[in-house]
Image (tube, rainbow, N blue to C red):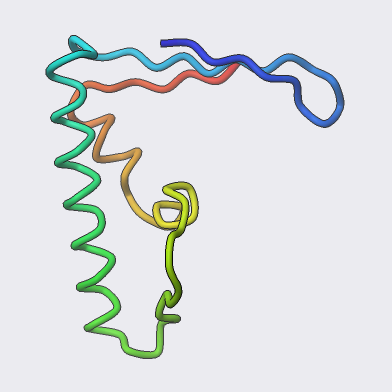
Length: 84
């Protein structure tokens, strides 16, 4: 899967994501690794209550996973990310 966009300085950036069959395998991998990352973040907040607790309604995936190890988890399952 490939995504392209222009950066603020008008340069074209491309993100290429590769891995197992996207319809079946990758969907399951992404869903399970997202769930495990969320559990890890919740456990971290329970162990360290001084961490900022997220309150409010709906938040974006980018916000939730920004400080997680989700990309590392996905890479370990064969999903690769390339930015050009």
